[in-house]
Length: 328
Image 1 (cartoon, one colour):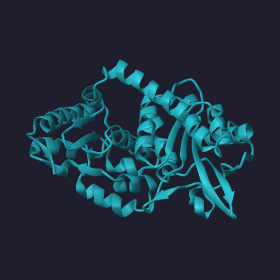
Image 2 (image 1 turned 180 degrees about the horizontal axis):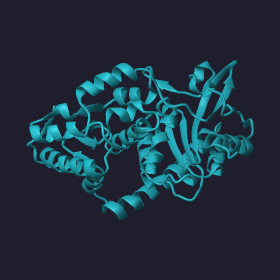
Image 3 (image 1 turned 135 degrees about the vertical axis):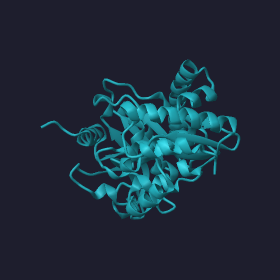
C-alpha cells in the first residue's frame, strides 16, 4: 500500500536528521497518532497564541533546559508537489507552522520536491511573516536547507546568518515572480487575485458557501485560511475584510455555533486585523444582485451558477472600487 504524504515526510525527517542533532531533540509521532493535536507544552506538536490553536506540525525540535523541553523549531511538511498540487491548495498548510512563528520560534513549511513547483507567493507570505511576527518563517523544498539552521542553533550569530541566507533566497524568488507576472504592481496583483485595495482596508472576496465549511470533503476551511493569510501578509497593517459573497450573517452565526471547536474556523474568526463579511454587509447592494446570490448560495460555482456568480462579482467589484458600494 502506498504511503500517505504525512508518513513519507515523517520518515524522511527522521532518516535525514535522526533523533537529535547538536543540542536539539526531535519530537515526531507516527501517522496513526493523534498526539500532534495536543499543545507542545502538553507533549504535542500544536502551537497556540491568544488561546487560538494553530494547525498541528509534523515535527518539532526542542532543547532540554533544567528538565524543561523548550521548543525551538516547528515544521509542517507535505508531499503535495508529487500529488498534483500546483495551485492555491499549497497555501492550506501555511498556518500549521505559523503558530511556531507567532510564538517567536522558527517555523518551517517543507514541500518535498516533486512534479510541481512551490508557488512563489508562499515565499512572499513567509518573508512578510518573518518581518512582522516574532519568529522566522522558512519555506523549503530540500531538507538539507535546514541542516545549517539545526547545526548552528546554539550559535546566535551564525544562526542569524543562515536564516538570512534562506530568507533572502525566498524573497528573491517571490520578487522575480511578482515583477514578471504583475509588473511589480500591487494594484495589478489585486485585480488578478479578487482583491480590492482601499486606503484603510483591503477587501478580499470569495465564493465560499456555508456547506464548504461543514462538508469535510470540501477542505474549503484549509484553503480559505491559506488565502486569508496570503492577503494579511501581503497587505500587513491594514484591516482585511474577507468577503464571503455567497454567505449571509445568518450563515456566520450558524458556523460560529456548529464549528466552535474547528481550528480553521477559529483562525478565520480570530486572526487580528481580519474580519469576515458577507453579502449582508455590502451597503447599497442592489436587491436583484442580492437575490441572485441567494439563489446560488448553496450551489458549487460551475456551469450556470458560475455565470450568475461572475455577473454578480463584476457588479460588486465595480461598485466597491468606485465607492457606490461600501462594506459596513
